Image (tube, rainbow, N blue to C red):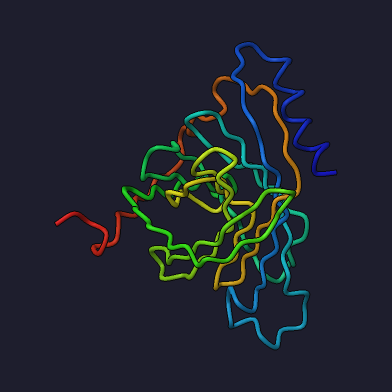
Length: 208
């Protein structure tokens, strides 16, 4: 099913005018709401949200597409689309439901290797850990056999492609498939007319 959906976007793009070559990694995503928001503990509903995310990328840019598979009516959780230039330290988080963009400007990360390794989809991956600007602990399993800095969870200056991501606030991404094709030439453009909020780099990251 995930392969079909990833292929579908590439196939649809063939029917429009200008095209750009791209690749994609599909991910299954689960969010444990009890970790994401401890206030829901004790509430009587399914507390695991499920999504599918495709990370489309070229030699210089990445953008994700998000599909809700299951989200309880009692809890609204929107996973924003990520859009960034692979060689930059900036990242746009796009919320189409509320027509809003969070712009993370100049966020620099330095993931540390743990020495652990495992295989994901036949790729040897090494584990790296770090904390984001919210102080959330993040673990990424990265292969250096795919392009650098590919990650559906954000722009973290990775030395390869993240095939699994786990966060201390209950998010779990795992790669399920790969695809290649063509996309409309405006696919990596920001939407127009959305409200933009800038999140500057934490003071600890700023150059002195």
